[in-house]
Image (tube, rainbow, N blue to C red; front, side, top):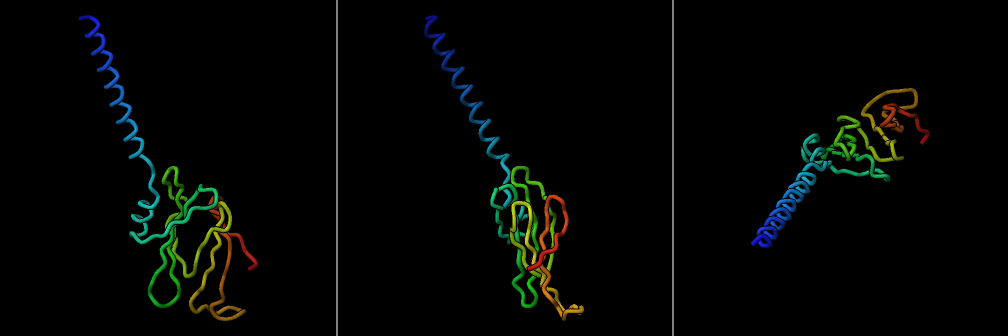
Length: 138
């Protein structure tokens, strides 16, 4: 009789520990950061996301479909934490990854008069860690 009791006790303990392990795995899975959801909520559900080469940051972009200058809205997300490294930024132009922590930004301004002409393209790099613009000779 004692052997059966001991057997059932061990069986119940193993079952209980298995259930707690399963519920722990479900919690961990549900707590994972989904950067596409963050981007869709922040940029109104139309974003295209591109990771940098090291998969340490994600560039999420929305480009307008209306005629006229290319309107681009973007954010940078740190995928492990879900933190917005670069908050919503809007520009007339395009943005792509240049290096692991730098973006290449090409702006196409509307009608802006300057010494070299009207509406000249402006290209520069933007360091997302130092939060500063780096001039580019492109």
